[in-house]
Image (cartoon, rainbow, N blue to C red):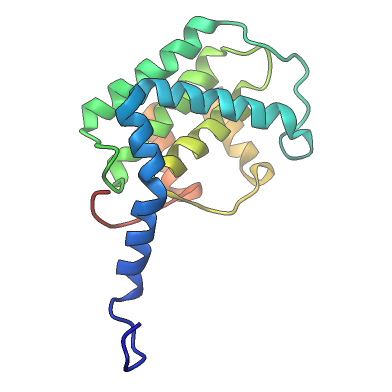
Length: 179
């Protein structure tokens, strides 16, 4: 803070600078091992969260992976989505970038790589991916969104519809510059 007591930059500039710094580990990891590998690891992390938090996400009746190929495909599909929109992990994500967590959601929820809790895992995966990319997360419990998730997946809503729903219900848009 300058001597006169007034901040030297506005709050938006400060928040954007801090956001860029907090995203640096994600950017470094993507640059080191690749986008698809990082996304696959996030899906595994999401699954561990779902299985370990029954009070928040419900009991997983049958733990374990049903189809390892689909888990590999999640990373590939998300990387294809990233390339299609031209997303650079150093960028603060714009609205088009929500297609990346939406793609992960769709692949997991519709292809069922796990024996149980695929929609819950898809939801948590999308949140982890979006947050890592730089989207803010709305503080809405899963229980309040569960009916929407079930309705969207029951009719196999397309990626674009899932992305629009995520922008309305899960993610908070940010603005800023590259990391």
